[in-house]
Amino acid sequence: MEIKEFKIRASGCGQIMTGSIGLTEKQSITLKDLQSKDAITLKQRKTQDELEYKKANPTLPETLKSFCQTWLKEQLYNRRNEFSSKYTQKGNEVEDNSLDYIAEQLDLGMLLKNEEYFESNFLTGTPDAILKDYLIDVKNSWDCFTFPLFEKDIPNKDYFYQAQCYMHLTNRKSYKLIYVLSDTPNHLIEKDAYWWCKNNGYDELDGDIFEQFVDKYTYKNINDKLKIKVFNIEYDESVIEAIYDRVAMCREYIEQLLLIIK
Image (cartoon, rainbow, N blue to C red; front, side, top):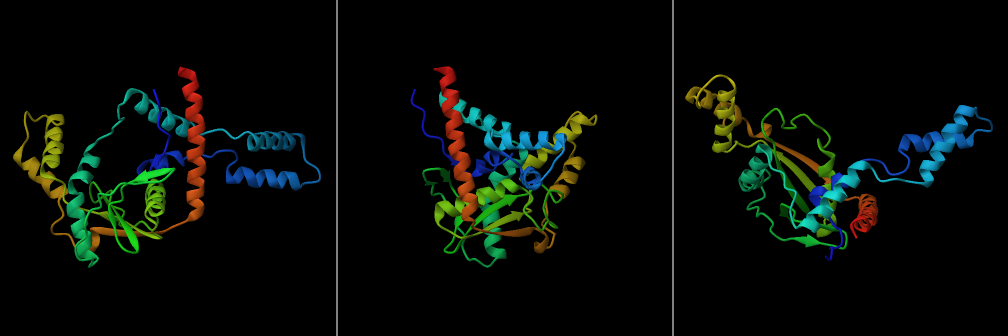
């Protein structure tokens, strides 16, 4: 069976960028400090030897190995390892409405969802919306308590790497990661309320309980400025280079995995 060459989806890029290969920044500083000393203790010599060996013999993080193994199984068995939850369901179902809301709040006129798929030698992906000078990616928070109202930095580092991939694929230098606090679809509210009732002694969904959940997960009377949060991200070529390095490592590891099953 011919296996296609590994390329990383923008949405999955954060997963291959976790963990350190070789020395961490702190370990590099420690090693440099030890190497600069004229005399060190036996314990320090042991630490220096261990760090020098680790630097010369970098290993892949277990998280990256696991990602590669899953990717290869998808190819070998022709199956997708799909994940779904109420959080991803909401995000998928309200995405179009959220783009309309963003367009209104940021005075962008009509904001069309992008359907074009992009691919390079290392990356693939489909950004949410492509404008002349920047990209927009929308994230829908499950409720007000997961909405990053007070955050100054991107809550999820994976989205930073996703942004860099999308900008590289579309030749854009700026990116707006926008969180929206939108109303949860009625059927998801009903499901949550139903299970709450089942777990708390009710035989069926109670109407009053359902209305309480509706109040909890809808935000029509909330000020608009409390329902949208914009994080601006700029393109960083050095990040792309680091991603390319990880993709190359993934390809080498996948080749090793293939030898196991030949």
